[in-house]
Length: 252
Image 1 (cartoon, rainbow, N blue to C red):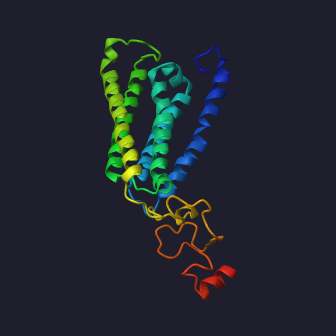
Image 2: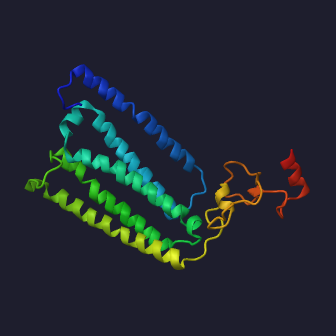
Image 3: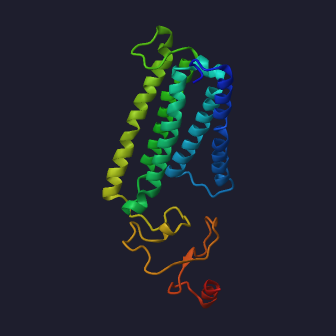
């Protein structure tokens, strides 16, 4: 809309409304950071991918604010700057989140633990490959390289070579992931019910969960954010830990 034959006053409206997108975006980022603040964080593979996705999202948000400005957007319109921003959002953020979810739920879904070494190798290759692939597109766009071209001018060679190396690294990063998933599902270490010490009800049944989950309705006695505590998380009147005092608390 900025580069079309739009009236100047309409460009101002589009710019202001586009910048307003940064408000819920910023709220999301601060909510994620606040969730991590003073938490008992372990840098396992799911957490690494979650943090990687947060970093990608912040960088995508910075370039998004740049693109919402009329002068900047007109300068980089239809260039590789837009391609780089778009892929930081859709690949860097979304794919990191998907990988985090897969590793997080893998023990519960399969009853097996994945190999942590291969998982971290997968993360670092993915994180490095993603940035090598998509970050160079920003200086290319600032220097005027258009997107959707079959060839490019010689002055754009360096950053295109860097992006190509990143693309190959990103492709190779899927190999340890595929190997890890197949071998761990077939012969991985048996997963405990709650390998992450989480407090959700889904982590208090066996891995993988039985068809009916709980034989009886569980009673939740823990604090909603009581992560890392050693007291019982869920209890029922037939639970071995269900002392008369605890049953009184439940009944009350």
